[in-house]
Length: 268
Image (cartoon, rainbow, N blue to C red; front, side, top):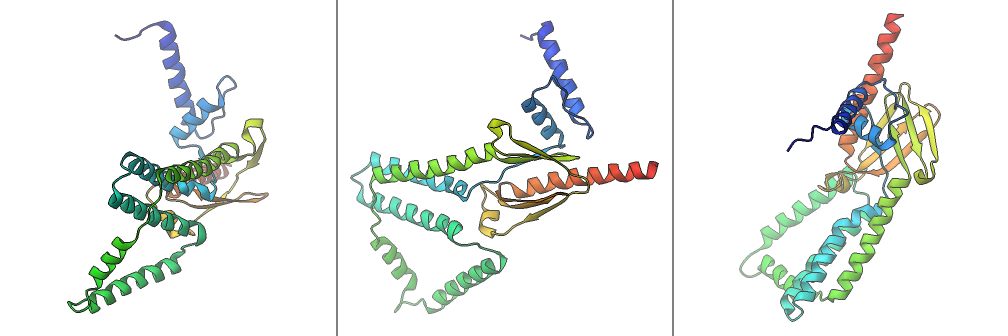
């Protein structure tokens, strides 16, 4: 049943008017509109982007999920020794992979060296593999001989610890972030307490850097660094998730601003 009450129609009209107003680049927030509603409308219209810089601990979310899955699996079937070792191997390989994100910075050069080394190693192993020296069978036997046996309680402790670290990173991005529009940038510090700095963004220069290829190609994160050169300061935002989406929006914001300035100058 459709609600045709006057209040419902008024809400729809008000929402439609807000969206229409938000699509205009030069629009300012009306005084009777909440900040959250205005932001959602401006972001949907492509005239605003919020950039959040995370701690490295945000990359621990997949490790926390794997720890939870392993903990539940081991707790539900504690007598299956072979499966316990299998879950232990899965966890330790995942742990080593994500610790590499923390310890090393896999730039383009190191990534190419790593991939080249892996391909060369595999090719050599294929070359020396034979009936008298079955390389792959020996490797498989070596992996099966590993007994990575962790208790379900320990997996759950790891899950809680990694989740807490990721939660701290999430909280940080809600307190400190940057909002970019066509004509200005707003820097929020301790946003819950209203600390905010406004900076004019005439002729902005925004750099997008991919310093770690593992972080960038990670399907959950696609992370990189954003460097904003404002007229009075330079701001570096590390571990920005969805870096290419942010780049596309900032490029559109900058180009729209440039076109508007040039057209005004031409008119004069």
